[in-house]
Each structure stands twice: as structure tokens, then as C-alpha cells.
Amino acid sequence: MTLRQEAEARFLAKVSPEPTSGCWLWVGTARGLYVTFWYERKTQKAHRVAWQLFVGTIPDGLEVMHRCDLGFCVNPEHLEAISNRHNILRGAGFTARNAAKTHCPNGHLFDLFNTYTRPNEKGRGCKACMHSEQRLAYLHIYGQEHRQQAAARQRRCYQNRVRNR
Image (cartoon, rainbow, N blue to C red; front, side, top):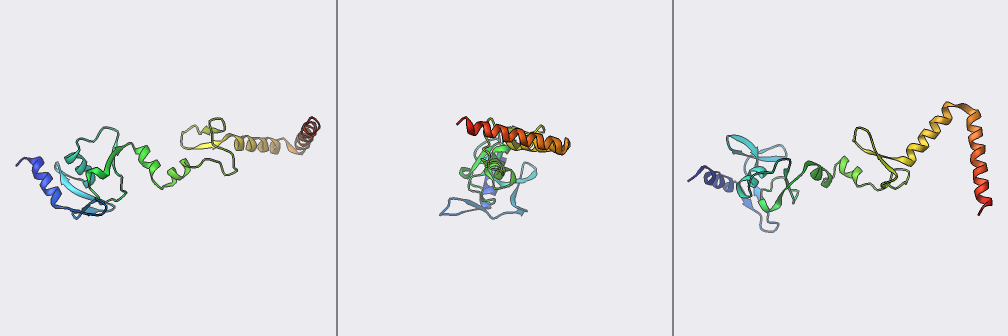
């Protein structure tokens, strides 16, 4: 019996197939949220070992994730190799919730023309809201006189638009 065959036998001895979902439930060792298995002279996450034993090597830059979202399922058919970003966006965490938003808190659409990426590339913002904030900051800096002049200009602009309808 080769080392790989021995590892497969040891692995399958710690699996209990679940008939309704098709999951292979791990009955071996667990550390925290993930189940573990001794393979290639070290303790590894059992779902990664399942991929290596029954599918092949894990591609560089990809992670093995559960399609069934059950941390103790090691069925290779329920596993997939995806990027870390794809995995995060599929989840229910803070990053995934924000990425799914289509409008800013003020109701402006996040689209190609109204969305900017922050310089550190850690998030996005609404250009319409940013311009409003900049305008308020400008008016605050230049005092009451400028605010009154700006308000008068806005009134004239509005009145001209109403007249031209």
C-alpha cells in the first residue's frame, strides 16, 4: 500500500456520509471552526486534504472553499477552488454586504460615473455626496458673506430655470 493509498484509507475512516445532503461529515479531529487531518507530515485542514487526495493539487492563488457552507463537510464534490476575493464576496461579512450595495446612504446610485475608489483602494464613495461635502466645507471656510452670495446665485439660477420652462 502506497503512502497516498494509506492516507486515503485513514481519511475515509474519519468520514461519515450524510445521505440526504450528500455531505461527507468529518468525525475526526477539529480545531476551532475547521476539521483537521495529519497529512504530509503536518496537520492540515481536512477539506484541503480532501481536495488534494481526490481532485489534485490546489492551484496557486486559490483557496479551497465549501459550496455547502458546512465547515465539517469534506466531500470533494462540495468543494471548489476560488480566489480569496471571490470567497469574501460570497460570504455574509462586512465587505460582502458593502459590495452588494447599489446606492449610497443618501440614495445616489453607485455607477461608473458617480463612484470613486478611495486612493488606498479600500472602499468606494459617492461623488455627488463628496461634492456636496466639499461645497459645504468651502462655504464654511469663507464665511457668512460668501454663503449669502452663493444662496443668492442659487436662487437666481433656480428662478431662471423656472422662467425658461
